[in-house]
Image (cartoon, rainbow, N blue to C red; front, side):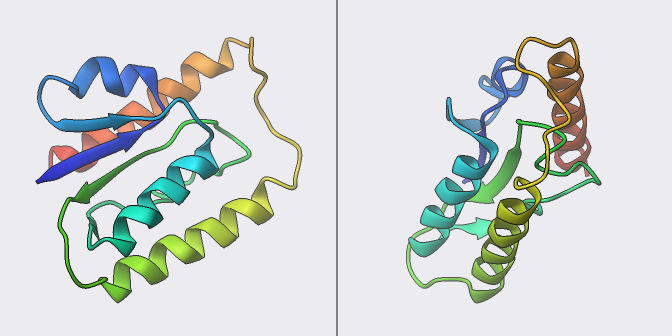
Length: 122
């Protein structure tokens, strides 16, 4: 079953009626950890965890599509998510380009929603 894992409220509003969706009120990195935990249970990545050219220090929002499964670990999915976690940790050491109360937060939500919509419409 296709499942969207997101911390973006706009994605939750847009897709919760159409897709299985797991909303996490957590950080970008926590979304990656959650996806990794699912991959350890057998889930498959359907979208790249660092899709687009938006880096973790440029947005707090991330939406990833997985195929919910159980069983053997897909090594390709595991390697991709582990690499994404390492890259995200490194990028988050640099100053963030957004502020929690800034209008740019709405822009960040829209960018993540647009990237996800593009992937779902393929």
